[in-house]
Length: 101
Image (cartoon, rainbow, N blue to C red; front, side, top):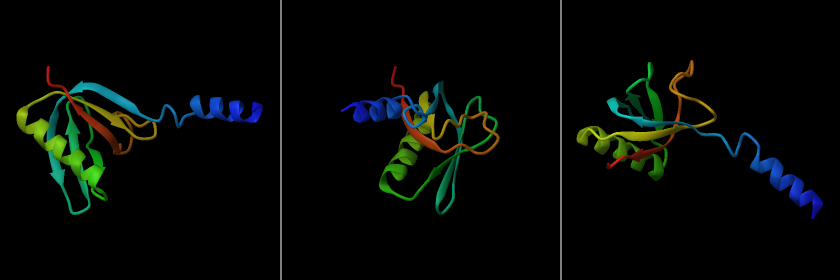
């Protein structure tokens, strides 16, 4: 039981548990779509972020990005592996939430 608790708390407080860096209120300025990847430029970011189009979840995320950009809605975006839009490489998007209010 002790080993289980130590493992649980290690996982809970590890980088895996906090692997998303987010930008909570931004708009989408531009989207570029290529055969296997979409590049999304968010306001306040100096470089494009990537959405790989390898499964249905990522394709749905691109659809959400296109809809939010068309409706000029604010979005909250999260990036993988502690990346942010200030990263020296193009960050990979893990989620996009549309702000309706």
